[in-house]
Image 1 (cartoon, rainbow over the protein chains, first blue to last red):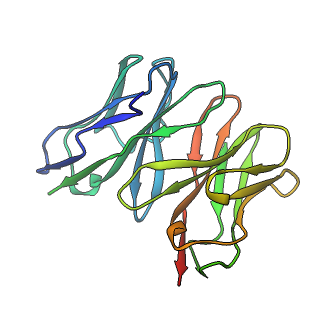
Image 2: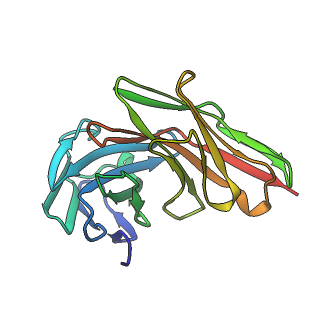
Length: 113
Length: 113
């Protein structure tokens, strides 16, 4: 398996624009996590899914953020409208619910100018 | 609710010296515990995990950790570090009930020659 695949690797956008981050989890995994990493706040859990269903979105900062998982092999994290304070590295991770070992993607570095 | 505290933000150590990175957690339910490592501009990689059984767990690259339920700790140790161990280390806790996986703030291990 190729591991967790995130796209794009880098994204630079202007304030106010919509940004969509994409994630393909490892085949067969049934849990998926979205994290945001910044120097100030560390690694924050934004939302996670079990069997494509959102279980806990309490970490989503505000209504500008939304996440979907339409099927077991694809998830998106959308920011609309984007703001400079959203600049961070966003990680997607997947795991098997049976042992909970999370495998991480390479991350998307988002810069909002 | 669950939380993770890494007690040291930076740990400088000389090459070939032993090191301990400290982690404490709190949770109202039973948990699984993990240590991850992050090298610059990369995602997180699993070092080791505790799910059940022996409280001393061994991981990759010569690292080990001990689960102490009474002290709610899961400290990471290595008897002799190398320059290549310089990285960011994250302790994580996963709820056995919900699968929610959260991370501590991270500890930067700086190995000096």
